[in-house]
Length: 263
Image (cartoon, rainbow, N blue to C red; front, top):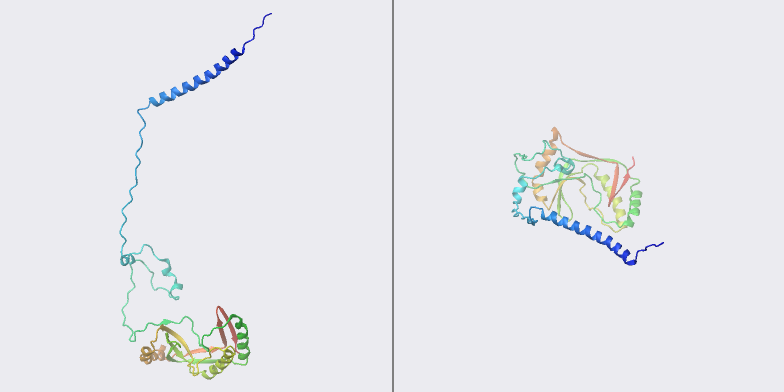
C-alpha cells in the first residue's frame, strides 16, 4: 500500500498561498479606496483661514460725562446706615436732582454733628495693656463713695482741643459743676499714680454737639449770641440739656468699664 506524504516544499507553498491571499485582499482594498478618491468632484481644496480683525479701540469718555449718566443705580444710596440714619424724603431716581433754595451761613463754617454725646472728666491718655486692670481697680475704689446727681447745660459755648486742630460747639454745664469737680479729683488721683496727664485746671464742663476741622473759634463766637437765641426760643421756651449722672464710664481701646454711682 502506497501512501503519499507531502513534502516540506508543498507545505511552504501552501503557507505562501495564504499570505498571497492576504496580500491580494489588501491590494484590492487599496485600489477601492483610490477609486473612491478618484470619483470625487475634484481635488480637495484647502479652506482659507479667516483672520479676526481687532476692532479699533474707542476713546474713553470724559469723567464729567460719565458722572452725569451712570451705568447702574447704586443700591447703597437707599441705605440709611450710610447717611447717619437719615431717611430720604423721596426715592432716589436716575436723572432726578435734589434742589433747594437757601441763604448761606453768616459764619461760613461747616459743622459735623457729634456721633456720641458725652461729658468728659479726663483728657485722652495712653495706658499700657498691663496697666488696664489695676487702673480700673483704682477708679472703682476711688468712685465708691461718690453719689449720683443731675447736671444741666443750658448755655452754648465754643471750645478747641489742646492742639487747636478742631473746634467744637457745645452746651456748657451750669448746674452740677461742684459735683463734677469732685469726680475729676478722684480720676486725677488715679492718673497721677501712672504719671499721666490730669484734667484741665479750670475746666468748663460741656457736652459737644458738633465740630469742624481747624481753629474756627473766632468765627463761631461772632454768631454765638444768635445761636443762643435759637436755643432759648426752642418751642417757645429755653432748652436745657439735662444729664443724669448715675453711671461713670471708662473706655480703653475696644473695652468699656462701667462704674455705677451710689444713691
